[in-house]
Structures are given as structure tokens and as C-alpha cells.
Length: 270
Image (cartoon, rainbow, N blue to C red; front, side, top):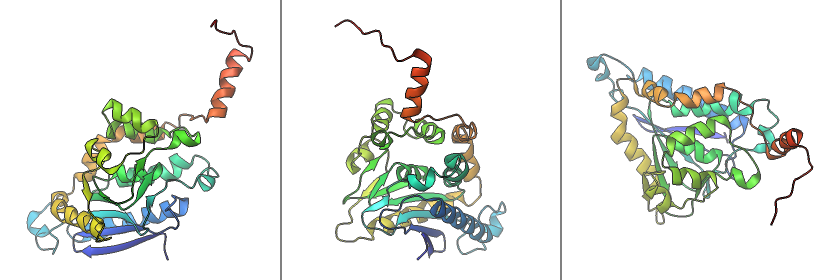
């Protein structure tokens, strides 16, 4: 079984399904597969009339140039539990060279993108979901959480820049950075997701709803500028990634602090 499966549930909708048990950890291999599939989708979309400036020509294609991508999981419990840190940290500049290009590709994809969140989405998994244009989520077990603070990890430059754009409401951003585990109703109220889908009687309901959203919104991207519009909107994310600004882990920050101040403390009076 491939790490990411590509299917086409309709003429105008493509589906990418993460299939890496037990929790869809984001490894370099999975991210590479996701990137390759996005290239395949864009090529098929363009060969199906997507991005064609001539309206008459677009209408000769069955889809009329419409296009949407549903990103989901083939696992019951997890959309994605984030990065495989063991593998990621073995790669020099992992985020700038491996993760960020896929994040940027998804964030600026020229088709409508919908995350069908069928379970928990943590850290990098939450970022992937937030990179999509729409998010529909299970009514069953599923939390959204940027939990880096709980395992002593700083945020990569790209994550920090993106979250400031995606979550502009200061209390919601603060709570997210402090590792809040957003329930579906809380996430919807905060604007992190668009819909909660009752899938207790039908495990496929979330994906079905995502496909419906894709069919509804997909015709809007037929002329072709949607990816470029998003690229302009999210350009600070790209700039943050390209800055290669050093991101220190807690032990490195502590060393830098004591190197600057020394370890002898002037105790505050009680």
C-alpha cells in the first residue's frame, strides 16, 4: 500500500488519502509522495480545461475546467499525528527543504482544496489541514492541536508566519500556541473548521461532504488564477521559510542565555 493514495471520485474532484499506520506521521517519504500526487492532479486538471482562458474551449471539457482536491485519511482515529520527529531531525534544514515546499504547494494549489478531517490532527497534521481552503470534520473523536509546547519544540518559521495569518484573532492564536486541544464545536466557533459532519452512522460521511463542497466550489477555479491569488495572500509564509532564521530548542536557548549572563544569580527579595 502506498503512503498516499490518489483517486478521482468525480470528473472534477480528486482525492488524496493518507495511508501510513498507525497515525499518519509526516515522514519525508510521505511528503514526497503527497507532492508528486499534487503534480499529477494539476497536470490532469490542466489537461481537462483547467486554467484555460478561452471560455468556449473550457466548456468543451466534461468538467468545464472545474477542480477540487479532498485531502483525507484512510485511518479511523487520525487525520495526522504530525511529524515523525526522529526522521525529520536527521535531515538538515528539514522544514525549509522538505516540509515547507509541500506546505507551500498545498497552500497555493490552483484547485479548491478541502480537508476531510476524520480524526485527530496534531502539530504538522493540523498545519496541513489549515493549509486547505475548506475544512470539514468528524462529529466523532477528533481534536485539533498545535502541541509543540508539550514536547519542548519551537515552531518553525513557516508555521509561525502561517498561524498568524490563519488565526488572526489574538486569544485564539494564543490558545493555539499554548497547546489548546480544540474540540469540533470550539474549532468551528473559532473559524478553524467550516463544518462538523455527523458520521456516527456513516463513516464515509465526512469525505462525502468534502466532495460535495468540492463540486460546489470547484467551478470557481476554472479560469486559473486561484493559486496565484493565494500565493500573494500567503507570501509572508514563503518569506519566513526562505529566511532560514535560526530556531532554537529550549536547551539551546538556555545555553545562549547563560553564556550571556553567567550562571550566578542575583536573587530577588521575597
